[in-house]
Image (cartoon, rainbow, N blue to C red; front, side):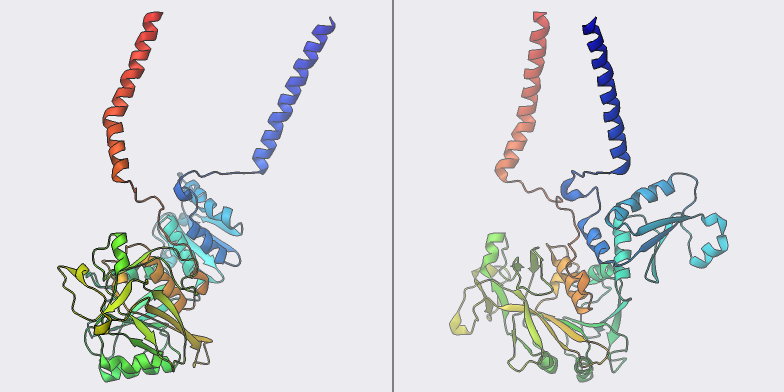
Length: 452
């Protein structure tokens, strides 16, 4: 009798503990949330870049979605925005039915069901596409003080900001325009000075000598506190640009920079300079991607520079400036020859420079000079970290320091690196190993059935 009583008490106690456990799990499930993302690089959740952009936003952000209540669109948008809200709790989402006020929708220019308008500190950005890239780019633009006007010098064979040719910069600038920059042409045959309101002037590899008036306009622009990006090329010394080089305190060295270390990376042409280590400075802080520069001119700074000049790009110890013509059919046959005037590396081919701005409206003036413009061209932009480095350079020149150290975009597992031995093993395993394993399993199953 007593044993039966104990059994009943044990049963009731177990049921009570089970109920308490279920209640505790239910309580924890309603008050706490944990999400795990096991994909490579966490690509099923918010990217590192998006989280970094959210970290730069100081204060609340409101997203207004103009989506019809019918259907599942609102739920889809809410689930998408929730990933941002987990990283930034003061980001709010509000829905508006576009059919309630068609006149206002026309006034706002909203024609797409589900369009988003992002509000931050009195500024706004509109999105017609629901994707992480589009929303993160919009948030990044809102972190800027406004749209930046970038003037590209044209008319003398420079790389075109909107060009589709192999040597042009159309792809790169198209991506920058999504981040709040606007590229405009600057032809000194039509104007005599850099227009007011220009945030940055880019001189991208002119193929022809610049007119004297153009050089004077550029030096006057620097003297008045303007920011400049100058992309030059090897063996393209233009004597008309000497006043500009003197104003910056740099000198373009003769010859083309070559590096024998590229052979270990599979580069057959020593004129292709690969850089994986960067001098420590603001632009390259935390930057670990390898960049590729097809043909490079080495640079040197002068002793009387009025700028604070810092190396940005530097070649390896096996590099030198090759002064003799290089045979394109056999470029690897060149040899260092000190007697002919070759300069031994490491050599700088990129400088960042800053100084107290002569313009009373600005605190600091900035410029960057790089001995190669191909690395941002349509042909080479996708190599390694070329695009990411270019974005850092533009952000720094435009004074958007908070955006310089954003992690680069891109999936970590786009390329599968397999050695030849590994590829042979995979092939044998798929062709021979898997069928053989299936035969063994089938034989074991048949043998066990016969024993029954």
